[in-house]
Image 1 (cartoon, rainbow, N blue to C red):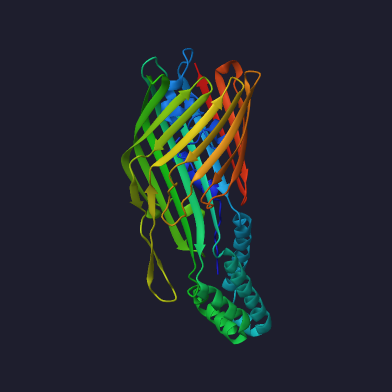
Image 2 (spheres, one colour):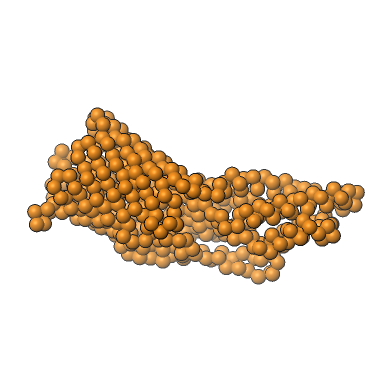
Length: 436
């Protein structure tokens, strides 16, 4: 009886993202905005506008020149049930149980029937307890990365962007008959003794074929490669900026579904569980300045909807002899976000709110986020930031965010982000950029 259910969802998400390219609610990762509650639709600088709201690219000043972000990275994990530590403990315990069963011989059982019986009943009861604990538990992690080159102009402003976001989720589907079978082994001495003799003669499959719980790993990587174009013009005396980013979009989906007793996160990337899709999409944005200190923005990410099916994975149920099909669908939907910012040379206050729901795998619940944040610029080269982000649907963890920005000579910029929240949620991000 072996469970190899190593769990590191943040590691899975990051491991998928970084080799292929290079908080979870957005389609972007940007350290300054992430530290300010995940805001930025109205508050981001022109240098990072292409990541959030392409219209902001046109809001550069006369003295601004080419800006390069290389790179922006971040990751976040939520594990409210402390699954990582718990499942590591389970793996160690079940490995020892498997070794004990594999070492059984008929002679050993006949020589010490009471000791063998006691060991197997204890192992069965412990495994039943562990499976009962896993039932209904989930953990999920997200990671993102991006690079951008922004070229402001007096007419059209241009930017080149490559960004990727990964989402991974691990859960279990515990078969109640597994627990019932193990409880019978725990409490029925005759049945346990018979199973022990069968395992000694024919191997541990005599036991494991009665165990059919499933581990489900889902992951998606969405990568965008685009060119943004933005321009500012006057409308009724108000400066209005408009931007658009046509982009090539590549999506990789992972449906790692297997027996919980043979789960190994290193198999997540196997070609059997992976498929991909390439398509075209577009982001748009608008920003309006009201006086010197107020900006209102609206961004639309991924205006073209797509449904992409994962591979169909079939698992044999050893108890019934039938195959069970496991398939999911990843949904790319328009994400429309409104934002407002009040800014001076010293302070910035910002607020963003999603006008549409955030979609992902069809098997997951939708979310819809709001965020507020603030920034204080000190000494001309140091910025202190903080914020809050919440899910109005109540399906994701509410988090507090914070961070620092360092900008010596206003040329080299280095930004750091920290995230902490309910349900054992934590995250971090960093961004390096240069403005010439």
